[in-house]
Image (cartoon, rainbow, N blue to C red; front, top):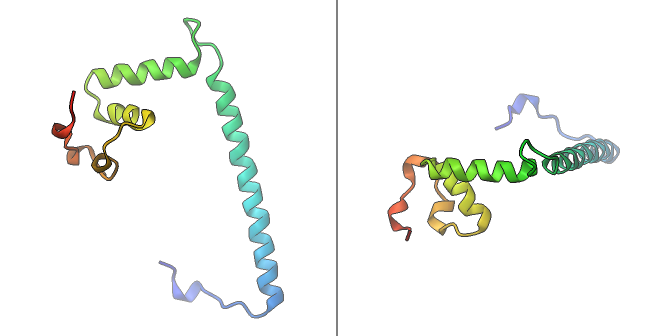
Length: 105
């Protein structure tokens, strides 16, 4: 919640226009930075890994291995990614609240 003492009402239409313009410019800079980061990461995931597979493939295998060893978060991540997550699981906040007994294995 904002501190009421830090809030200053906009005095004129020109001031509102100027603040809106500055916000739009800042938003554009942020969008370009995020797009560039996504592009860099996407390209990096396609680079070869030690055994000839892509980094993306190696990460998927590592995630599956963690899930097989009992890592619930890895399991939930995989299930969400493939679109087979029960509705009640999507609303859970912590591992302690997970009720996996309703799942059919």
